[in-house]
Image 1 (cartoon, rainbow, N blue to C red):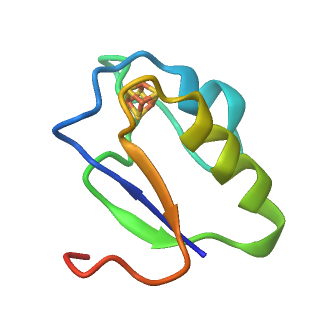
Image 2 (cartoon, protein in one colour):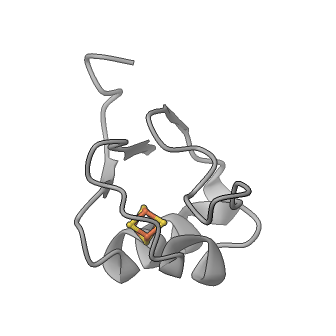
Image 3 (cartoon, rainbow, N blue to C red):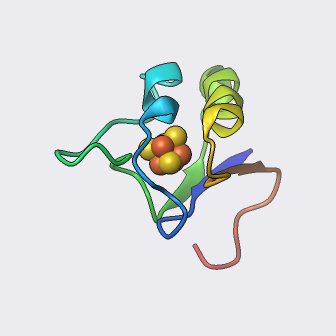
Length: 71
Ligand code: SF4
């Protein structure tokens, strides 16, 4: 499974890295540091990836079975 974070949608609410501390981190402005990127999620972190996607009020995080085309 892959996670993709849309930089344009991220508003810096900080909910994602709060629920997925082993997968995501914050930058010095409160945005998720990994915004604008996508990568394959290790199997043991899939729960955190899905929780992060569910927690984001902007819908900026998507978890998909296939690699995003624009990666
Ligand atoms: S919860 Fe969503 S809007 Fe907030 S920092 Fe994470 S990706 Fe950005």
